[in-house]
Image (cartoon, rainbow, N blue to C red; front, side, top):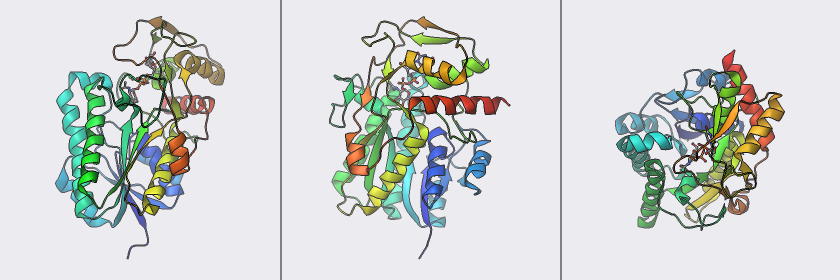
Length: 340
Ligand code: UD1
């Protein structure tokens, strides 16, 4: 019997995946990465090695390719799966919906089929707060209603959660944990890995750091008339290493869960921070003045949303440790490191 606790991490070279790979090693697991590098950088494996001292085990495969993915299930006695691999740009998903439906749903279906066939019983799925659509209340719990998706990307996350629910209801060897992420930001404190978006970033924090370093001219803050203390949107920004640790707590919970129950859990910092607060925090930690201006609202943006994380605390025994200041500091250190 294998001594090693092998965990398949699809999308393990991506922003969230790579940080989770670090946490897995730290907690005695051996991550096996499946990633086709479509949206991740070739420098990340080297960064992972610098942090962990281990050569990451990477299969360069498209997770939608069942034949190639199967090889990993044949090669390792997997104890669990963390399924990150997905396309995640809201804007792109509107332009290319089929790409999103094909990749995000196809990859999940493949992983579940193989997990059932090979009796891999512990499955963590990367979901998103996008499943709540435009929420009725600023603070959302897992019981908050699932509203109409604002984008094809959002729809894929809703459909994936539905697929998991259906498989679970039909009866399966797999115990599922869907983690609904809020807004992951920051980078590993060592600056060896971080967020590396392809092209112009959609997300706020890489846009801030790229503007400060001179890649972008100016940040536009989308909207100044929201019903929030300073008029800009309110989000729940969570340090990516806290999010990584949530996966470890999640895996351990799954492994010790003999009831076969599957759960859906919010993963955020549990507090609302505005876009302007992010800018001010950035200016504080960097000592720089950011070039920014207000612009019109962005289509599809929710005014204010943040997570009730009581369930994550109670069930997974997880609490976030970093604040927004640490996250912005690490994001800025990473941006400077990649500019070297
Ligand atoms: C989006 C997705 C979310 C996904 C997350 C991470 C939706 C509705 N949201 O979140 O599911 O998990 O990305 O990929 O599907 N902003 C600016 N200027 C910019 C960029 C952003 O002002 O140049 C503002 C936005 O208006 C928003 C906030 O910053 O208020 C955060 O935006 P962003 O980082 O894109 O994340 P979300 O839209 O919250």
